[in-house]
Length: 244
Picture 1: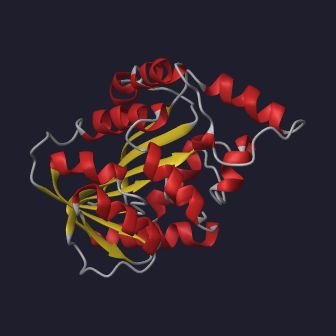
Picture 2: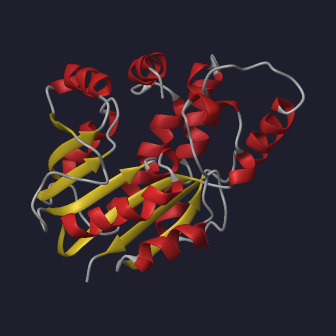
């Protein structure tokens, strides 16, 4: 992802419907297992410009890790969070240092050969009984302009992701599709992209105007369903897996 996309992310992360809706879903899944104020040791791996650091702090002491110096510079402008510049495949902390590790839209950015390496590092970082929260883009056939702009290497199915997590020793406790209501819209948009070049950047650059609040409400409405029921498919996958 280039510097322009990081800057766009930083500018819209606190206001764009996608981030607000996915925050609601992420919180709902985390709170199936941990209350706010749980005092967890948290590592947000691939933290980008730091949007998730703000709300993950409600669950404990959080450290952000990312390979991009520029992204971390922007992250520090939010609230001077604790951040470390390093690769997710070589995390510079002792084993069993964290109670919760988060991979929020991280794995799709990696080469496929690196995703299991990153998952093994997450397993190593977790204390016994600790958990990995994982969120990832779904369905490789949905690749489009957004994925090219963000250097998304691969979009997963739920079964693929669960299999990879299980192979490194994690126990899957919760796995769901998310962003199901808007999946037909995304399919229609991606289909148009194959015939018309109307978008060069990521979806973050698309100004939805007054629909921003509507889309946020629609996406946020899935939070309870994703946390407590089974949505079989969606634009994203969310998962919670435990280290025995």
